Length: 211
Length: 187
Image (cartoon, rainbow over all chains, first blue to last red):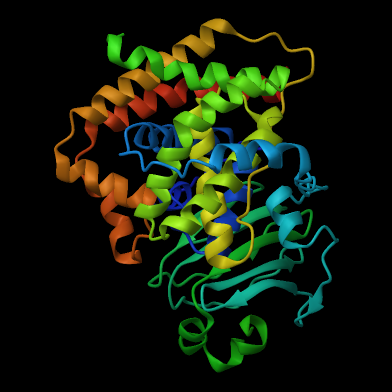
């Protein structure tokens, strides 16, 4: 397997570790962390800083009964359900977003398929399936787009992206990704709030990107 | 290692006793150490007294139930518990659980690497003293980021503030973390 060459930025990692990243982007980051040891280590090092800050925070005394209530709960509270784990090309955070089921693709024309995993005021998250060698029509972004390759590859003006690589596209990037030859390219993509996004894309592309 | 930072490794020992022996006395020590700190963190994040205490209960229960996932080669107790509290806060605010990366589990029969655990503890102690040396307003930005919800416009400031010492400490720490992660994947 080709090593991962496109990694997360410090700003994205910091925002993820501190819980300040919106859900669609957090899923892409968590999925990349499942595949990339070096970013996983960066994230865990940043969590060490969170722990060090927790150690030195001014304590707020808890009420006298809290300890006894907790001890009683140890024997009665049911343990949390087992988390959904990864399956095939989909790491755990993607399987969680899929509800543990395989994707249910919707055809978009030109052999391109998608499944929207979440959409709301905090942005949208989708899986995209692009046949080998196929180009995604040129588009620009109304904000941040974060794309993680799960299978196959694509290339655009920013370079070549294979499994585990993440592309961080800001609003000023015009790009035309083309899927590599071989296996179909399957990507996980998070975009900013759909309203901002929709306003920026050509009418022609709305069937492709509409929520 | 400065004397005042040495006891910081104790919570990790307590958590290991909970993980390996379901040790309730050690769990009580964890509670007494972390519950007031978690409550302080959650109140900084905007929760009121009563609900902060409910969330502290949730977090400590999760510590008890998830202790088997704690890996002292890659985290200290405080970092691991910070992560659980952060996830619980996100879960409550968004009404959906935050995505978590794939769990990387050690094979059952792995012997703990005492040197690695010690080195991580030393890195963390250096990180703490670097943190203690920050100007108060720099520390405040970090606390805001880690304990409160930052408006989007401020997130980029996180990487802009002069944290040279801390960042280099983290980098040293992550070299070890990365090695360890590689070992986990290629046993």
